[in-house]
Image 1 (cartoon, one colour):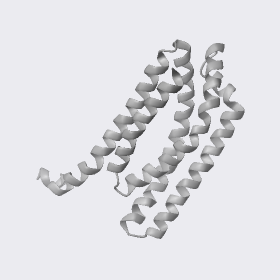
Image 2 (cartoon, helix red, strand yellow):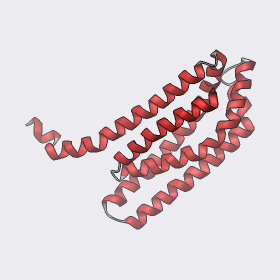
Image 3 (cartoon, helix red, strand yellow):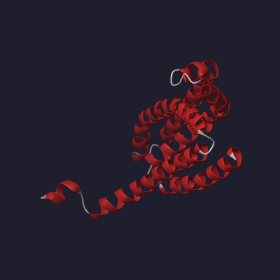
Image 4 (cartoon, rainbow, N blue to C red):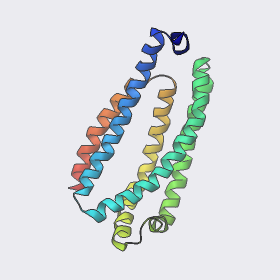
Length: 184
C-alpha cells in the first residue's frame, strides 16, 4: 500500500538525478558565502558588518528575482513539457527582460538611496562608510546575478541540473581566487 503512494524505482532515479545536483549546487553557493565571510572577517569587525549590511540589501533583490523567475518558471516547465519551444523561448526572453529591468531598478535605488538604506541597519559611521565603499563596487554585480538566476532557473525547470552544478563548482574556485586577490 505504501509503495503505491510514493512511486517506483524509475521515479526515484529520475527524482534523485534532478535533486542531487540542485542540493550540491546550493551547498556550493553556501560555501562561497562562508569563504567570503571568513576572508572579509580577517579585515576586522567593521568590515564584516559592512558586508553583512550590503548582503541584506542584496538578499531583498534576490528574493524578488527568485519570486519573479519562479512565477515565469511555471510557464517554462509547462511549455517544455508540451514541447512548445517557441513559447518556451518567449518565457526565457521575458525572464531576461525582467532580470534586466529589476537590475536597473535596483542599481538606481542603490545608487540614490544606498546611504539611507545602510543607515536602516546600522548607525555606526565607520560601518556606513565601509558599506558605501563596498556598495559602490558590488552594486553593478546585480546584472550578472540576475541573468545567472534567469538562466539557472530555466535550466532547472527543463531538467538540466548537472551542468549548472559544474558551473557552480567552477564559480566557487574563481570566486575564491578573485576574492583573495581583491581582499588581500
